[in-house]
Length: 317
Image 1 (cartoon, rainbow, N blue to C red):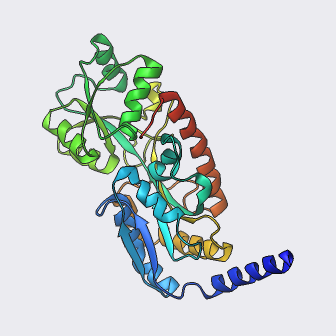
Image 2 (image 1 turned 45 degrees about the horizontal axis):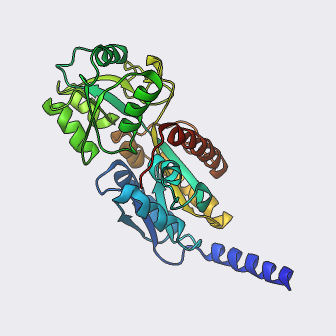
Image 3 (image 1 turned 90 degrees about the vertical axis):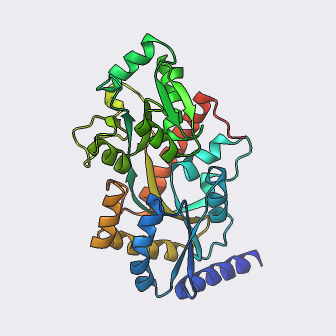
């Protein structure tokens, strides 16, 4: 009886996958007008045509994006509700809450579409041309260098905490309600430094309103090859964002394979490539790779953030 039921379940799943999609597909992503939102909207026309059904983009914000992650992980595993994930949604949240809202195993990796580096920038008045010089200013007088951050579970705040806990370098952490407010504070000279997305940071640098000392990432960004990485400054930690398509656990393999193939094609399409480059998404493995390569990447990220959260004693509740 059990074997017959299992066989029936396989048949139903397979049949559903073969007829998929038979209705519109909903994609959950973060803030409207943000980098992930703009990229998925650039992909939408191509996916609509390839899949024969419209994609409906729904923005979910607030509560450290826990509602976004829950919308994805609690969905039916039928391919009609998917999401765009990043380090905060997928890698940070499972470890930063005393009662995790979900785990990595609650997601099905589909397709990775790029890394989103950020830049450590300072106001032009700051007398530091390198990260080490900024460290020297902070060491000379505790709290003398102000650092704008948008909350405890963000890359800028985690770097500030790491500088203090592991390197003995103390910045005065000035909290803001958003990344944009922290950026504006640096431009206005209210604080000395922050870490913000590379695209907007470079625009501020070009306008003479900020100076970039370093970028996040394992390697220098091809959008700014002359700017060293934070790793090059002797900081033994890399917190760099990324974006990828995910679904709930148990998503049928034929659906995952088809989505991965269609997204892989679109990543190289001119309109999508232009959108990715406009947001400074970098293409490097596992971008455009298989679901298995994306899964291996996520497993490594999960282990890394488990260590980071434990080391910093970070809790969001």
